[in-house]
Image (cartoon, rainbow, N blue to C red):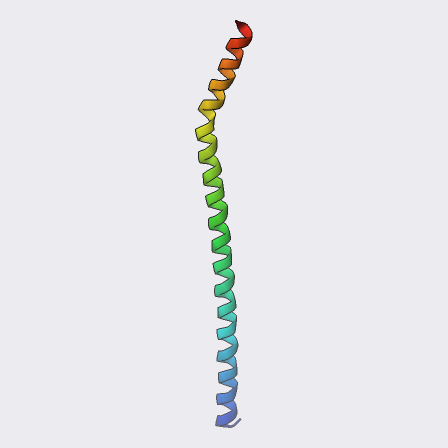
Length: 69
């Protein structure tokens, strides 16, 4: 194998590895963004449920008091 062929094959391998790494970086970025979105949605829904619980109990208590009285 000549030096030119070896250099060409090496350049092809490096180009292939770089393109695969770029794809992996893009995929990891997408997965990270997706996970952040899921965690943000879960956290916001959890906070919303926490804020609504006292009001819901209070409203049901008032409705029960009206039915009794």
